[in-house]
Length: 153
Image (tube, rainbow, N blue to C red; front, top):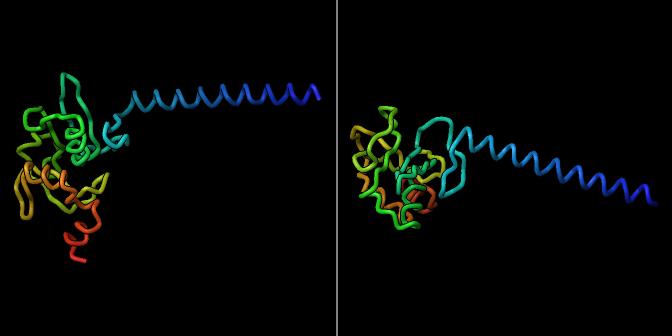
């Protein structure tokens, strides 16, 4: 009987230590090798496509989707028009000023909002102001009614 209790105690102790050490090493690897979106808490993709950055109070925030940046800014009372914000451009494959970018409304993005940035205008794109308004109103591809309307189902 004593041996069984001792075994259980030993097993629980080792399991607990192993669990905590595994979690800590995984978390430190993620922090060292990537960025986490402050809005949705998802790891940014290895590709920069659809990502955005915002410099707020000398701290750079990284977002996996430009829609996440808009929602985060609203939640934290950050004026994106007065902040240094950049978005990855799908046509030139570099970071550009978010406010001067053109946005498509119907692309597959990490959070399914559908807004994808372009440096050069093309048919069917909208401005940053329009994208921000649509995002805050819920008029994006993650909304089933809007997705149906945009895709013409």
